[in-house]
Length: 89
View 1 (cartoon, one colour):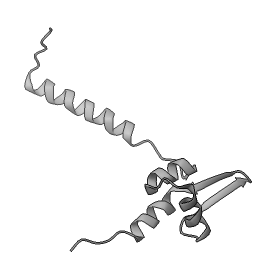
View 2 (cartoon, helix red, strand yellow):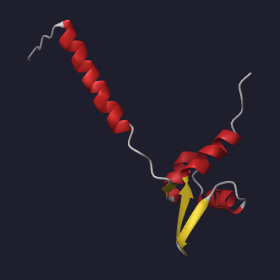
View 3 (cartoon, rainbow, N blue to C red):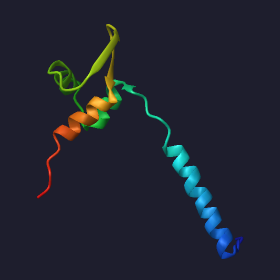
View 4 (spheres, helix red, strand yellow):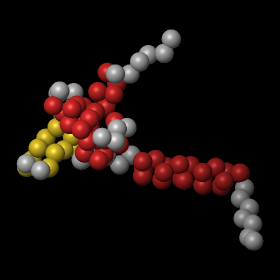
């Protein structure tokens, strides 16, 4: 087993570099349009019929580039979730 010793300023510099790299990886831009599987994951639902119901009732935006392929607007899903959120007491 190897032990690495660092003085305090070098240790904190290393920590700052690690945090900076992690934040760069997490700040990757998200796609505006997502597939049904990702939409269901965001909504925490397992039934595609529930997803279709939300779509049919106009609760979430979608795009249908061709007959068999439907994409969902990520922001409209977040708005739907926010609109249905209950405030705490």
